[in-house]
Amino acid sequence: MRKVMSANEAVANAVKLARVGVVGIYPITPQTTVIEKLAEMKAEGEIDADIVRVESEHAAMGVTLGAGAAGVRSFTATGSQGLLYMHEMVWWASGSRVPLVMMVGTRAVGAPWNIWNENTDFMSERDSGWIMAFASNPQEAFDLVLQGFRISEDERVFLPMMVGMDGFILTHMKTNVYLPSQEEVDAFLPPRRQPYVIDPEAPIGMGNIFPPVEYMKLRHSIHSAIQSAESVIKEIGKDYEKISPFNNYRTLNVKYRMEDADYALVLMGAWAGDAMEAIDELREKGINIGMLRIRYLRPWAESEIKELENVKGILVMDRATSLGRGGPLYLEVKATVRNQVKGVVTGLGGVLLNKEDFKRIILKFLKEAKEERSDGVEWYYPAEVEKVELRNPKDVE
Amino acid sequence: MLIEIRFHGRGGQGVVTAAELLASAAGLDGLWSSAFPIYGAERRGAPIEAYCRISKESIRITSPVENPDFVVVIDPTLLQIVNPLRGLKPGGVIVVNSKNTTLENSYYLDATSLAKEIGLVKSGWPMTNLIMLGALIRVMGVVSMDSLIKAIREEFNGKVAELNVQGVKLAYERVKGAVKIAA
View 1: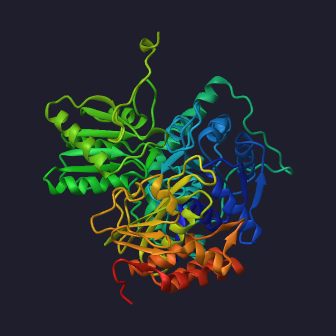
View 2 (view 1 turned 45 degrees about the vertical axis):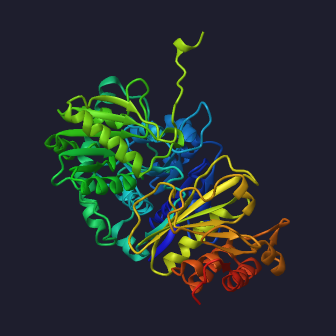
View 3 (view 1 turned 60 degrees about the vertical axis):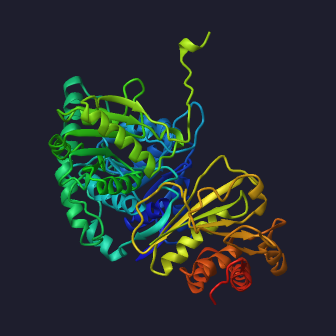
């Protein structure tokens, strides 16, 4: 069935079709309509899940993790300040090796207050030991959340998975989304199995103090599990074609016009759509540029990224920052390939870019690449912002 | 084919709902569509814009509509405050809630009076957002009335749904333009 819905509604439908048992909820824009939709589904009797309202995101993850530890398929959603407030429990979930899925509607982080889109919140969890995917349209948001339960619960992975999506730009964008039937999803996603569950009849301890070597070994096992998740994700992605043949999930990341590309643009998220439009127009002018869209931040599919070494120049665009260093994606790509890499940080706090901005950024990069000075990080502001005044400490008397 | 539509109105007038329902109706007609607003620190009365794209193919672009084929002005007082016509494509069409208009290449419908006439008033505000869709689909000739009515009934229930259905049908008949509309 194909129906016009927002990414948030699509995510709620994925949770419904996955027969999730427990949802820990605490509202935060731009994620709130996910949990509102789930609460509505519960009220209408469309889902059996226990919707547990809590007092904070820290507790929302506590509930979701607790349910997961008891063997129940569980889900939560958050973003921005909520994700930061949850941060401690995010690590507790991966350290406990408990499968669960969380949706992150990305949003800038305060201070100062800003409700608009930016990916820094999502990127700031990259060291936490989760499987991390990032959608570029509402269909992919649905697909990744649904696949997320199977990936997370796979015995070769056994880690929580978060699926990010651009706040408002995707979370609130209504477009045509294909939903497989309940029977198809049931065939794709078997009931949850896990080796240890909390059971009052047969008590076990979880997360108790670990001596140094045991602790380090556990961390090492999570590291290995994330790496081995790469082949699991491909396998599950291929199997997903049986119930929804519209997107290709046989690779972790997505190439666009890379076959004969001299230059590559690397980015993730919703703005890939506008970037593809820009690439098509530049191609018509004989500029051989392609795109690699990062769909999985963790695992970082090194062999897929390494293919970028075949191009003459790489441009990485981040809607996030590691302040004082550049964009997190830029840093990841730079650590993977031998080529010169240029980074562009832009689109923070809701700054919007269009196709013309992408063309401007790409053309400037090509000029620099030809002069072999396409290195370092540029902060790009769209054309309407004629002059941006930055406040430097040295300007303040 | 990619048709880009921009809606202008004020917070509380259902601008976002109008864009979303148009997208839903287009979806019911078997077309691809996408609709989204620019969210600000919205409050009642503040200028709002929302976007809708309709195509025969899937839509990749996610940035706001800057060069619309159609502009729908739900609140005509905005013409003096913001510039709803900015970036309008050459030959682009304006559909305005007004008793008349001198704007070039435009169509007009007195949606406010129509809303009052049929009793489509919420908290003292005549609800003109969906009525304007009735005018727009006539001018566009892409989305069917049947699908628009179906989309309205999927989103709303009871009296609100039926008043809006009545409203869009009347709007479809009453919209007038400087250019003759094909029957």
